Image (cartoon, rainbow, N blue to C red; front, side, top):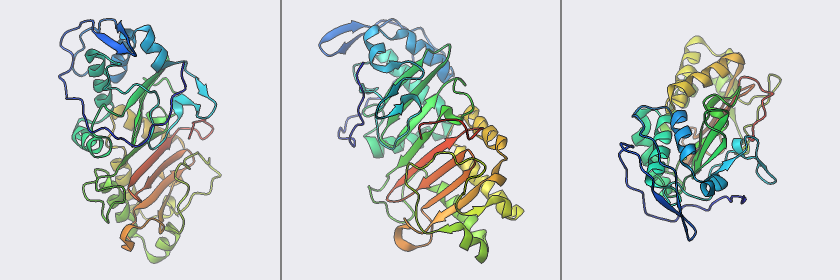
Length: 344
């Protein structure tokens, strides 16, 4: 089993064409190096099938050579990257074979796309594909997957790429939202985005947070505004005794809290309902938004316009770190218990 490397920024300009989802099954030849191998036939799958049920069929369709490359034990750990299943980064491939390559046959590629789209709310599909087009020359060329454990039992599927780490697990990973730490981002108008991030599909989340700042009084703004940004990857849990930067939500007025609740809803909006529900239940278990603080950062203010590009909503085991400079990077780590260990 090879150790899989972090990939550089995307270079290819080709994109796999969009395919209708599986209507019939069939065996197909795939190439791994120079040796042709035949994958097992995939069964027909009904539209609307869950990501987890399709992941099981995908797993069963893999031949031995494919499993050797992309399948791992539940707790597989690498010396440099730690517990691989829960790792998160802004630009990486968890395994070497890309999902648009001939490592996978067309049925398997269709299943992977179905899994991907099932994790995302349908209303967000167009926006996420735009992000992939802007950042990674489209879907398929620079994303890869790994399977941990065994679908149908305890398992997790992780998909990674530039500005992407997403997961599905059928609730195998206990106590965590989104099956573990996730990442999303967008560089819609270049690596160094302009003020107000034209075309960025996630900028509306920052505008919602800035509405909260606009409603704060002078004393509250002074408390909410922080000079220096935390390290980008700093999303480990602090627990109930943690020192959270910014303005405590519990000290806000009811209308201010209402706006923070709106921000939260916009943050979880892109994801399927089960993942949204899990994120909210994890937050409730640690005391809800009243246990969180909201911080805005002077550093990273693109254009010096005091429309804060970088901000952070954080509680005992809840971190949503929106870092909008030089372009949008968002790090998410949520659990119902701060003692839960994640590779973040």
